[in-house]
Length: 500
Image 1 (cartoon, rainbow, N blue to C red):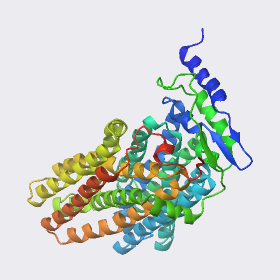
Image 2 (image 1 turned 90 degrees about the horizontal axis):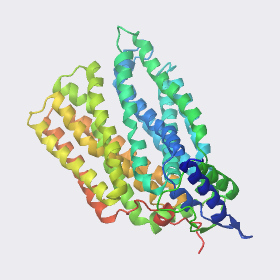
Image 3 (image 1 turned 180 degrees about the vertical axis):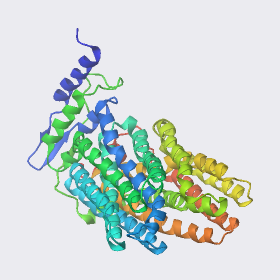
Image 4 (image 1 turned 135 degrees about the vertical axis):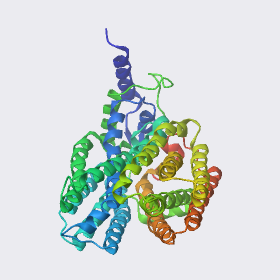
């Protein structure tokens, strides 16, 4: 007797072959039901492999960002490099500049040549540059390799967020996106532990520990490189770019490994869309789409990205300074405080992510942004009057970022699902670049200056500013964000190639 699950899976494949043959006319217009077929599937092994292969990228980014902060002291003590504070700042700026430029350049390429090719190009760049960083011989070489590492990570953001949206069924899209983005903090925890062990002078020589730390990232990257073989090109992208037969074959394979959700009977005939195939989308049409046709959505994306970037980078990049300057925590013990902070950041998307698909995007974005802002203002006041210890301050940050982490991930979710497929990757890149530029430059610089005053009230004023940004973003999201939960991407933002 054939098990029910297998019989059901077979029925899906059989139905698909009947209900979704590709019809193509001489004008390059193709009629397809691929979007509906992808969205009707239950979660299966294919989707789990996609999450695993893509989520590790954010682990790598978390590792890189944490190492960059944790290794500062070791770079200054290195007999070979002997960095100054300015050199450390220059290297961090180089990484940030690489991430911004990489996101923009590779974002454009992602929409033009496909998601899968960019997976390997950006990962190969990251791997090579990270390994090279471990072999740096002076300030210039270190800054160059950090720039290239950042470019690889920035490019990964665009290709991966696009792929999540285009392969994951609509009913799971929100939770999946939030958990993958939240996995950044697993990397942060790994980086913190690595720094504690590798920077201990009783374990390794001062000029060896930081080099081995960077090789951790390269080793993880090699594992990811193999895992990326599991992920196909986006069928939605292939359909529009003149490769419908490949798209159809990929969806057939996915269906054979999955079953249909119970609200889609086996004999259901899927709705079809008609698309005009194209080789690329001109930049003029991209600009018109983002800033004229979807101007309001662009405003929402910009506000969400910029506010969370300032909030996150301002606090995380000055995390160690607050602990050392105001609470007297030794620099080599800061890693222990990062661990609970990272735990709160990962548990937030994991536990609250489902609500973005049930209660809805607008409600949950408003709640997470608003609660984050209110809690930061409250904890900032307690900090200013001196009632918090290093431990209770860390607990406060852990609770705040339990809500702020899904809020930040929701910014990527919003941008990646509310624009048409043809401009999706470049839209992610553009708003990521603007948000990172604002948050990565203005936030840490402002808070660094406030901490240098030695005044708790000055730091509290900075916290109030970050709090206000998050609350404003919550209001903007409630008023203007799109209720995209459980809807197909094509109904949220119709492809530019759509034909009536």
